Length: 190
Image (cartoon, rainbow, N blue to C red):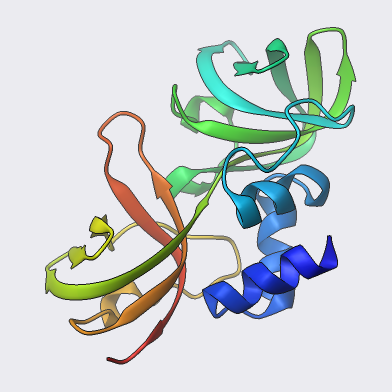
């Protein structure tokens, strides 16, 4: 697991300590590291201490999450850490987006998860910027939104992205619009 964190930290140009903090805030170290490092399929779907899947619907104070193993009602416990896409840290499940892929860490009982942490799955991004048009970067990986996307305790510097930059980092794709947001990045001037 440490090598996965180190590889991801190196690939994104982010300090290992910052990445570990992000992983813990955004979904728990056990399931979150796999989701960050290897994409959506790297983490186990139901590992006894959490689940990874797509939000099917928001119901009251919980999220119905579909995994390969079935549907789970994920309900945050008191004080649960929650991170939703570009919204960053959130207080209620209403801030999550139906269709979003999430990691939920917590105790599983039948088809419920009492979650101590819930977070959107972020995917690795490597791209070269060809142009910046306001809040959008035109890159070799397609258009990427720059104005939103914050991780707790991370100073986001999207405004400094310019043509010729090589971006490496983590992104989130909004399931409603398909737009991709730069969440965490390092860049090298081209």
